[in-house]
Image (cartoon, rainbow, N blue to C red; front, side, top):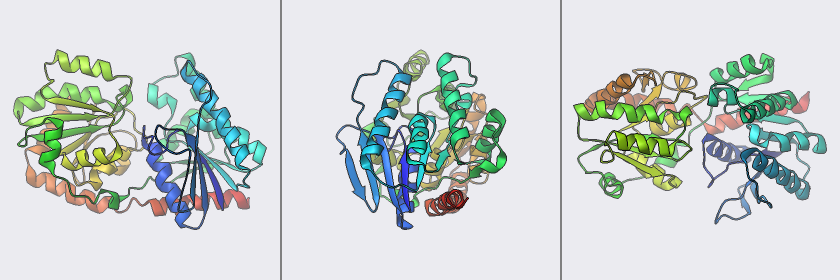
Length: 385
């Protein structure tokens, strides 16, 4: 089968979970004997064309300037369509990921006369809380349009499935749930934790509390910052490392300054994938206090790396992490609860080991190979009907 994937992010462009999702799914689909074609955006110092194991990657340049977000999205969709037309391949399936590539995917559905599959990784209503401004209204409308045009919709949790049904009134039988996977072998690496701490400017005797994600309201990093003084009051040998970037970064920096905690909280900004793995391996607990999380791939990454995870008691996290068994649930708005959960892990080594051992067993169930097999079944079902 010849499968076309459209995605705005793909390694080494890693903004959220879509990049890793498409990368590992494509690899496993290729391993199952398919030809997988990825059309995505250009990235600095990265070739415009690559081929690995029957996965063909084409990176597209946006050839004129765009002065606002939506114009940029429409522009790169145009160049995605142009690239696919130039490839001149007889694809069997078109698979798009989230609303950002929906205009190109829908256009190509009619141009190529092939079925369209949509994976929705999140919804605008969840990301921003309400559709109350013109940009959000456009984004939500494109999301609805993509659910209408798609032959099948794939999502990664039951939480996300119900959100799509409730918000867009999509028939339940149009949606398939296929969990994300985790490449456990990709984290089998030896790390000198003290060396990583030195690079981060953290004393060797200190424990690391880690956040990884976009610095946005959705990811709840500000609640971790607000919880930090309560942790430090109980245990001063703790340091917080926040990995990522986003529109809320200046607000977070200002709040850290206001709390006089620059000595205890390290902001790394964006880091490459290898450096990220080293930092995760060196951490003592990973905290994900999101206020909206359809799946939460970061929880699996923490579990696969052998560190305890503390996650919000919302959304997809509740379908991945079992409270007090392989991780902890917290109310993300309750900073005292976040602090208490952190302290319960870093102050109790036996409890931390208990959570880690259970988590290691669980992550083995999250297989990209299984996700690819299930996705292939969806493809075959739409081609047969």
